[in-house]
Length: 155
Length: 386
Image 1 (cartoon, chains in turn purple, orange):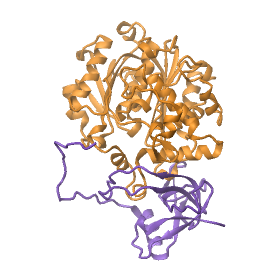
Image 2: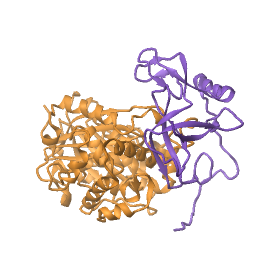
Image 3: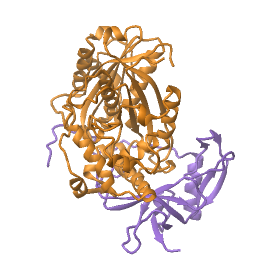
Image 4: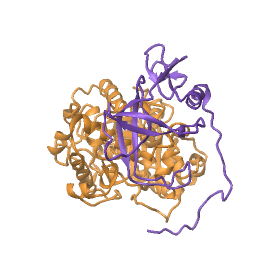
């Protein structure tokens, strides 16, 4: 049903950008991704848990992490959904294209899971426990979009 | 235990709807506040402090504590804002409880509200998540919940038919609640035939978006029984937040609920919650949570939730009715939702729940969920805690 908008507050053509810092740990991830097509996490010196994305502090131990470890690029689907409803994406201003596979992937060598798109492929339906590989984009820019999606593989 | 024991002595809520263009935020807040004051037979002059909250990115106005004072009664009174995403309403209740329990304030007015019609709910929720790591694929609350449901299904072999039974229960209960937004019974088949939003969640498995407000008045033991003949005593509260990024969550179990419930029941001496509790108002935004989260709460062993739901034990008239109000699936003004759970259990304890009253409620639990996968939990009782 169309709704008549009597009062819409917007910035017109102007933009009001945010300037987020990714920090040294996030920078390390994006640098390795861009320059070496490698994925890294950070490892807690106390509990040994490997976090992806890497970060400074292990929340559970409240301990500073200093060790980076390589993870992936293969992994396992921990859980997933197929998103079928759309909405205006506040990141892009356009409707999120649906349906898309939304996967939580545990990279080989990692303890946390990493969320990203999963390719929808009728021959290889997404299942929990399925193995995946990471598909990178051709020209790397050092952002999360350098990872295009995960693809289900047979091993 | 604080310096003072604390009880709820009055509650008020709006008649919740999908869209309230007839009122702005302050006016919506005012409706709930005047109803709570009338319920407690108090005036705004009797109130010592106010705690207010919503999930402010839904309205895009960040200073609710300031601009709402006409509606809240906060003009020239101590007022603070608390906001914790989906758990806002239950965090407000816990914060208000702390203020009264501290002995610093005798009567505190607690207000949760939301006008979800004023923005795109999924878009706004997405802005609550990390811009660098999470927002690209994140799709609001539904997709994250779907991932939880999917993980649980894979482990225990339940289906969307089992979850639909929860939706049928809550939507049936909502018919008895004049304040609920959606008051229409549905069948299992109707749930399963409704559009798939995000596998395995169908449209009728999930909560709506709502405009509404709720207010609760808490008072110390020095005055509670003078204000209210049967006050609702707060026996204890607990809360847990668990993660930084979405992928840190242990999806399929809800660790925050398990941890918070364990603490709450241990410190209040509840050994067998299933037998000892008389009612639960669960912040349950989708049907699968009605199975997974009562296991995490310790009501039923892990993997047995679906069987318990099918037995009818959680229906009105069952051994432990859950969501007599119809719950979140029937009504979800997000910043108020957790406080509505708290107010609804208070009504049950006070014996004021009308057509949705569970007989002889001595102990009840209300919860809040948000963030996602955070938990707030409160234990309410008819008896003054020891």
